[in-house]
Image 1 (cartoon, rainbow, N blue to C red):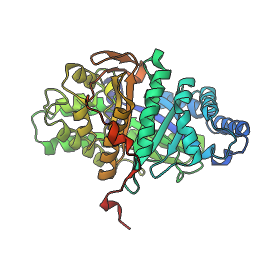
Image 2: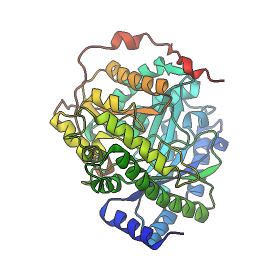
Image 3: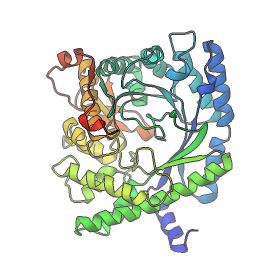
Image 4: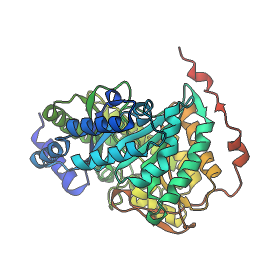
Length: 452
C-alpha cells in the first residue's frame, strides 16, 4: 500500500515534474501465424493482433483516469516478422508491414514494433527478404517500426549486415524525402538487442517470451532533475543516493500500472523498463540533469562521467521497486527528443564523437541523430559498426537510429513533431570509410564471450 506522503509526492511529480508512464506495450507471439500463403499469413497476423490487443488502449485509458497517472503511449511488439514470414510464398514483405499497420490502427495503438530481423551471425532467406523490404515498408506505413540486430557479444559483428543496413537507411530516407526522412526515425540497428524492450522503435517480441505479455516503460527526467536541485553543491555520494531514491519512486509507480494492466487484460506481467526517456518539452530533459550536476553544457568534458553515474544510480534505485526490471533501463540520449540536447547540438557543444563516447555508459546508443542528406551509405555503415563494437565489447545493448536528412546540410533542422521532436543536422567526418566497409565478413566475438 502507498502511504499518504508517497501519494502526495507522486501527485507533485505528475503535476509539476513531467512524470508519466511512457508506454504500456503488449508483446504478442505470431509464431502460430506462419503460413505458406502470404495472404493467409497476413490474415492470421491481423486477426491475432486485433483479438489480443482489442482492449489494450481502453484499459490504459481506464487506468490513467482512475489513478490520475498519465500513460502517454499504448503500443504492440510482435515476433520478428522475418521468422513469421519465412515460409510464405512472397519475396516482398511490404504486405506484412501493411498488415501490421492496419492492425495497429484498428486497435488504436500509436506504434507497432517487430518488422525485424536478427542477423548477428548470418542471414536466412526470410531475413534477406525482410531487410530488402524495409525502405518500402516503412515508407508505405505510418505506425510500423523496424529493427535489425547485427551484432552480439557472443557472435561478433556481421559486417555484411552492417554494410546492407547503411544502404537501406539511405534508401529509406530517399523514399520519405518529403517528410524529412521519417522512415529512418522508425528504424533501429542493434548490437545485443533485448527481447522485452517496450520502447520504440526497437521493440520486438522475443522467442523466450510468453504467448502474450505486458511490459511497461516509465520515464521521469524532470523528477530526477527536480530532486537534484535540493542537493546542489553536495558530493557525488549524496547525488547518487538522491537519484537512487527518486528512481525507486518512479519505478514503483510503473510497477503499479503494470500490475493493474496485467490483471485487467488477463495477460502475464513481463517487466518494468525504468529508463529515463526525455521529450522535447522544457523540464523533461536528460541533458538538463547532467547540466544540473555542474556541466555548463552537455557535451563538455565530464559529460560521460556524469552520464555513467546517472545511468548506474537509476538502475540501482529502480531494481528494488519491481520484481521484474528489464528492457533497457537507464538513461536515453535521443538528440531530437531532448530540448537541452538539441540546444547543445545547435551551439556546437555536442557532436557525434562525444555522443559516441556517451553511448559507452548509457542505455542505448546514437539515437535520433540527423546527418547531412548526402552522407554516403558507407559512412552510415561505419557509424553503425563503431556503435556495434561498443556494444559487443562492453556486453551491453547499443543501437543506431540515424536520419540522413534529404536535402539538408549541417546547421539545418529536421522537424518530426510530437515526441520525436526536431533534430539539428550534425556533421560527420569527411574521410571515407568505404574500403573498410567493403571488406564484409564477420568481426569475431571478443575473448570474454567464451564464458561457458
